[in-house]
Image 1 (cartoon, rainbow, N blue to C red):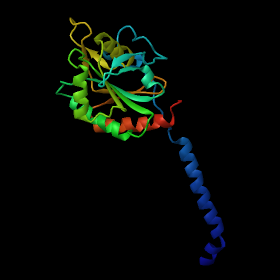
Image 2 (tube, one colour):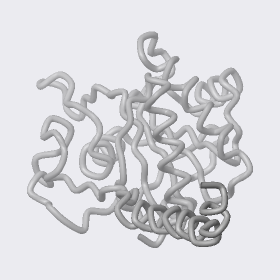
Image 3 (tube, one colour):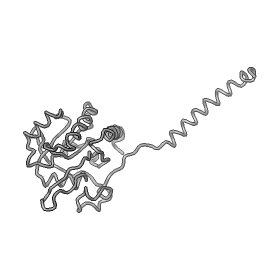
Image 4 (cartoon, helix red, strand yellow):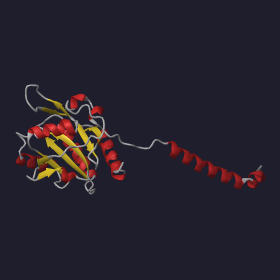
Length: 224
């Protein structure tokens, strides 16, 4: 028996190595490759989308914008050109989900602090309250890095338009109050081509982990 094994050891060894390589190749071929969807208004809960764009099923992109950040600097789409970014909606006096969302956004900030391809953008839904000084105070309290994360205020109509026509992420507020908004827990992932690539529950750590993984994927596949 021992002599037989010695006689065929080269054959056995070659067969084992060949089998391992073959199995690995089949696994890599059959293994589902990670992809991220491209979201259009027609793909999203109609409650979060303005009725004027709900029919759009392809080629949706974030519209041009102009807001003022915590340092009284005008922030436009040019500041986000070619960047991967996470957008959300909040207000500084919120005592429910906003503190959790902000803490989790800080975690995203930390994860990409040294990656210039990734930045953040938070819009207040109460611009009549959240002035530039209030946003600055909030930014300092929460650990916002100015070069990485813009907290913006501006015309409520424009914020409303961006929330429901571009980011597809905010519910209507009071029916009798024009441009009233109820922000959601959504973090919205936008790619370098200004397309929506994902929605994440900003109050859940497991969703933040998924968001970070998806941002990393986009960083490596930002042309796809």
